[in-house]
Length: 321
Image 1 (cartoon, helix red, strand yellow):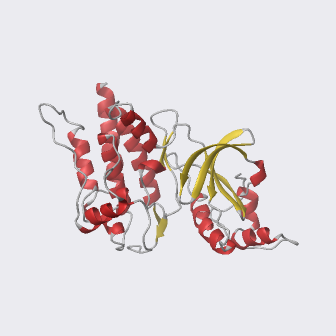
Image 2 (cartoon, helix red, strand yellow):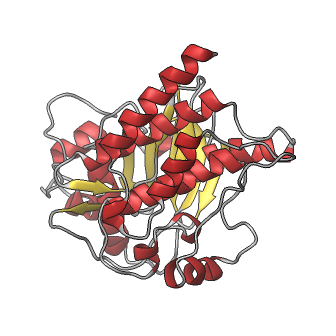
Image 3 (tube, helix red, strand yellow):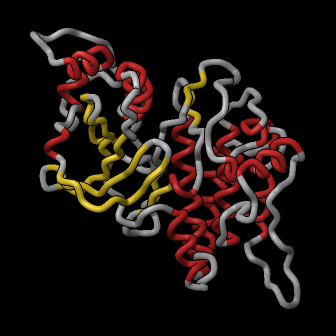
């Protein structure tokens, strides 16, 4: 758990007397100051139900010192090189320990002794936006009320704007509804899962594939150089999800999405209003979705503009309700 007196992002090695082999691995990547501030004893976690899973491993609802937390455990592979696993683990640790914003999930610490590796995060009782959207779909409830849609979008936009305002710029690369967490009220919206995130120190980044095709920008699908505007494209897909109340490209295999979006430049569509089918979203949201999903990254809106426009819409619609 966090304690006072550490400079953000310090992750250099030191030595201690007679460490165990697993402690030696962790000390290679995390200095004593970082460990004192952030390290959590794996045995201190009281595991509850599993609340998520992915290629990285699993997420559990846990209790730590009488506080409910989420523990993101890393998948164990018997022949994994502990140093290689720890190097990948460290990237997310270093980044998350430096981030602090109301719309970014709070990092509470980490279990850093291989093979019991886990990221400890604040627990968000509302679950993921993906589950909330598709729960409504299964129950034939349709999209969220407009004001709730706007507040959720506003929270995501503010979180992305914070990431993109950092130096170096933080590019999430896997911004999607499963990585947007909800709290107990409509304005509690937080971005999570920085396992694929990258820091941009030059004009563009080119670090190979990653992400989830249904939400990825065409330049990422083509493995072209990219910048933070790739996150804006993904934000447009999340807006589309909120409006349509369904999974993007739900009838397509991920490889079909790579071809349709990356190679052919196809777009998700919002049906136009008709006498039998009313408008699914206000014109301002429709225009924002289209703008965010433009092919050319430089023509997509910047996050400060998205925040400003959504702030205006939240208050305009709120005043009319």
